[in-house]
Length: 383
Image 1 (cartoon, rainbow, N blue to C red):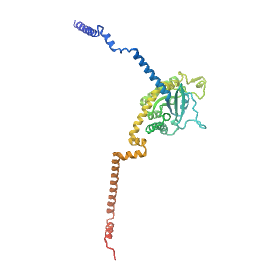
Image 2 (image 1 turned 180 degrees about the horizontal axis):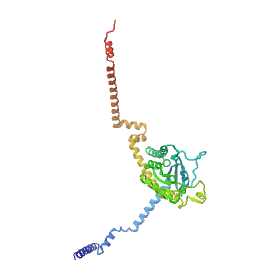
Image 3 (image 1 turned 45 degrees about the horizontal axis):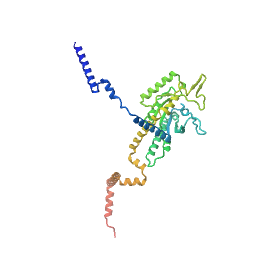
C-alpha cells in the first residue's frame, strides 16, 4: 500500500506540472510548449533573400580573390636512400622531374622544382623538394641536419621578409614559403630506430605523413603487420602525424600502364586495391590542403615567437630601421645609456684592480730595488 501511495503521488505531481505548463502556454500540453520555445523564429521572405544575397556575394568575392592570388603547396620527401622518393614526386602530379644534365644515380643534395598549373582560371603552384637519403652519409646526424637546416632556412627567410619595412610581393613570398608537409618514407619491412630519431627532429617544424614505400614487395599480410608496427612505433615515440601511414607503389617514368611489371602481372600504382597513391594525392591536394596550410602557419608562428624571444627587440629594430635611425634611437633611449655607463664602470674597476695588483707584486718581489730607486732619485746631483 505504501508503494502504491507513493506512485499515485508522483503521478498527480506530474499531471499537475503538465497542467500548469499548459495553462501558461495557452492550453497546450507542456511538451508542445517546450518544443515551440526551442524552434527558431521564422524568417520572412525579404530576410531570407538578403541572407542568400550576402552568402552569394561572399562566395563570389572569395572566388575572385582566389583567382587573383592563387594557391600553392610545398611538399618535401625525406627518408632512407633507395626507397623511391623522387619517383613519388613524379607520380604525384604526373610530371617528369628531370635531373640536371650529366647527373645520374641517387639524389646527393636538396633540390627544388616548382610546377605551375591553371585550374580553370585559378593559378596553382606545387613546390617539390627532394632530399638525399640519410643513410648515404656515414654519419646519420649529418643527413638529419641537412633536412632540418633546409626547413629552418625557409622559416628564417619568411621571418626576415616579414620584418622588413617594405616586404616582398606575394609571388616572392610564396617562392620562399615554409614547407607545408613532409612525406617520410619507411623502407619495406624495416622500421628503424634512426627513423624515429629523425621524426622527432621534424616534430614541431612541419606536418608529417608516413609513407610505406614499395608496397608491392610485401604480401597483404606483411603489409598489414608492417603498418601496425609503424603506427605503434609512432605512438610510443609520441610523433604526431597529419595522416595515417599510406602504402604506395610508384611507376617508372613513362610506364604504361602505370605500375610495376612482374612475370605474374602488373602492380598498378593508380589502382586503389594495389596502392594508396590516389588517396595520398587526394589528401595533399584536395581534402587536406587547407588543413596543411593552417598547420604550416601554426608552425611558423611558433618559430617566430621562439626567434623573437631568442634575439630580443634589438635584432627586430636592427632589421626594421636603418643605421642612422637605429643610432638616434640608441642615443635617445635611457636603457642603452645605463648599459653603457654600467659597462664603463666595470672596465674602469677592472683596470684599477689590475694596476693595484701590479703595484703589489712589484713591491713584494724586489723591495731593495724599489728602495734603491727611491734613494737614487733623492740624491743631489754632483756639481
